[in-house]
Amino acid sequence: MDLIKKISQFDLNLLTVFVAIDEYRHITKAAKVLGITQPALSHALGRLRSVLGDKLFVKSSQGMMPTPKAEQLSAPIRALLHGLEANILGAQGFDPRTLRKTLAIHTTDLIECLLMPNLLRSLESEAPHLKVVSRPAGFSLPRDEMERGTCDVAIAGFFGDLPDGFYQQKLFTDQFQTAFRQNHPRLKGKKSLTLDEYCSERHVLIAPGGDLRGRVDDLLKKKKRERQIVAGLNVFMSSAWIISQSDYLLTGPSRLLAQIGQAFPIQVMAVPLEIPGITIVQAWHERNHQDPGHKWLRERIRKILQE
Image (cartoon, rainbow, N blue to C red; front, side, top):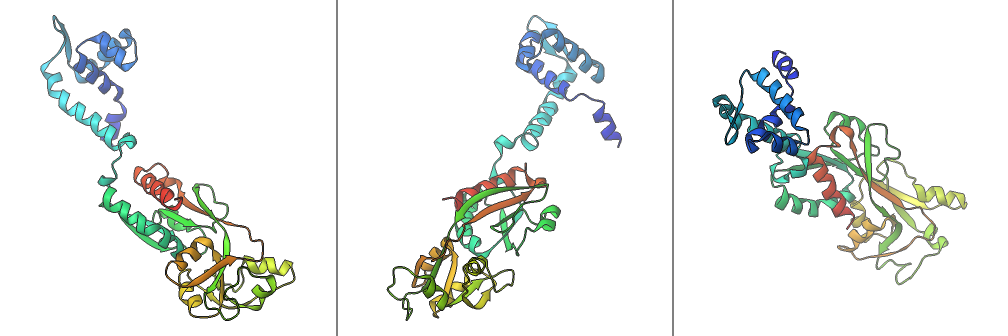
């Protein structure tokens, strides 16, 4: 408390006055650099002299020359101001190579597949000491974890309106398509599906919330139609193996189906139903909003998922 009291009674702006006079050895030049008038600088120097109990700078034929005490104080005052700029005010000069921490991302396995390969390559070259942990996002905003600081960024398309104290950034909008194996006995070679064909097939549903019903089923109900769902999947990527080895249909985000299509023989086509797209966002708490490390991570995530 004594330290806090002493610091609160000292005007830190006087340190910039000290450095300016020490650098230029001329009151007028120092005042111009600081953007104040010469009388104002002379007054500030008087206050600094009073606080430190020394003349600090005296007139000579070569300008304002430092006293022995000023020479003694020059290096530590400059070091203090440089440290203040680098560690507190230096967001513009932030270097991700200095990051030595672990940041937690809560998201789905689909976003993990789309994001992590390129993010890890970025970390290797730009932030080699930064580690990331990916955890399941569940089916809602991990509010408590973000407020406690155990979750740094959450990425998904089902957070809805965020509460006060949270930020979000749109990453991309995805559309829904349907997919099935290339040798499907009834759909092989088709260029499109009718709604009758779509409803007559059996389907698997990505249902992290545990429901055997999704937005497609709500839209079908409005048309007095329904489809048969045989299984609800907890994660996105397991659907790749299921539809490639069965006759089930999967309706999901186009990026998911494109990812599956890189490794499995599937056919992708439009859903015979108008389905609103899904917007993927990254969300974070205000406690991390201005942190340079978090800013760097969020920008890397944005660039990777918007490519």
